[in-house]
Image (cartoon, rainbow, N blue to C red):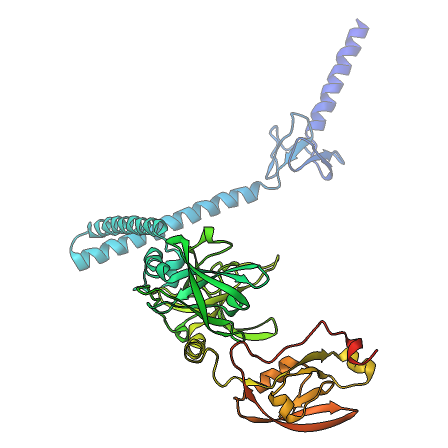
Amino acid sequence: MIDNEKNIQNTEENNTDSSQLQDQSFSGRRYQEDPNSNGYSSAYVVNEQQPNQGSQRAYPNNYSPYDGNVNRMSYDPNADKKRKKRKTALTAVISVLCAAAIVATGVLGYNLITTGNVGTFSTNSQNQNAGKKDQNATEAEEVKNKDRDLPTIYQLSAPEDALTIPQIVEKVSGSVVGITCLTSSGSGVMGTGVVMSEDGYIITNAHVVSGAADITVVFTDDPENGIKAELVGIDVQTDLAVVKIDKTGLTAAEFGKSSELQVGEAAIAIGNPISMNLAGSVTSGIISALNRELTIEDKKFNLIQTDAAINNGNSGGALINAYGQVIGITSAKVNSAVASNLGFAIPIDDAMPIINDLLKYGYVKGRPLLGISGNNISSFYSEYYGIPQGFRVEQVESGSAAEAAGIKVGDIIVGIEGTLITSIDEFNDIKNEHSAGDTVTISLYRNGQRTDVKATLGEATQEQTEPQTQPTTSIFDMFGF
């Protein structure tokens, strides 16, 4: 009985302590991170007793009971900010709606004043949108059609009134023939020619017929029956020649003007590449360049460059413009493993005066000739032997201008007309500025001394040109070693 009373008393004391503990206020605090909350939980610790303020506790702003534990609250530091954000967002939405309403009212009012019809704006907008759709569809169809009808390279490079390539071939192919030659050593040479007159005169390259003992002309429509031809005239300096066959009624080519050519315009080549089995082959391209200066076998040429394919056997063939006119005589190509589509032709404007002289005289009238041959002296041999650079004379032609001027074998030509030279090419460049019959001053090195002589240039005939270097002669033989 006594134990029961003690238990009851202890229970009442515990309840009293608990009630007093619940009525205490909080002054001190410490913070610990709550892993279940975005903010922090505040654990308030009892520091001193305060009077009981009522059965209901008034919590500070932003505090709420935390997990049901006594003397512990949870705190959300972003609560005020979230409420402010919601208010700001609501204000922005209302502002946008008001602005839209003002704009719509203004537009409707403008249409009502100007047209008297509120619905005009929407109708016009629909019509404009429909018109744009139709326009876009039309433009798309036009682009599609253009893609299907893209111009070819030939169309881009040819004038509006130009012939088509098949029309050009039909017009010119009958004027292009094959030429085969047999040399005195028994070797054969093949090339191409261009008919220049209906009575059998044909233009070709000099290197095709040079040294030929027998010349035959072959027509592509009758390759089995060649016609014997004779050499009318040849000029190796310009690589042009004229042959003639005994036949009339030929289709003569029409000749244009190479001076009117433009880089980028269409070019067609017709010839007989490789063999007569490929006679009449047609290739097309453009004019790649004009006035190309090339040195071929010690001779300088001014040529038209084209990317129309020109192969062995095309020499002497026709380079044709978009009107079916011959504007060049194909003569050379670059043989290289690192380059392609580099073909060259003699401009027809440069060729015709030469051809006319060949027809009339058999050679080019007035071409100057001195009558010597020999070897160039390089800078190495010049320094080694203590002699000047120039051209050492190895041969003097009998009856030539050189013999008349007193030029001798062993002389070293070092200048002409007051200009120093180091090779026969430089010498010929200056000499060819003069004509047959002109007198020029030639500077020589002889027996350790320099001397000048006067020479009256002769006239080159047939295959005569100024002889070039003779590489078979040893430099040691030249100076007696």
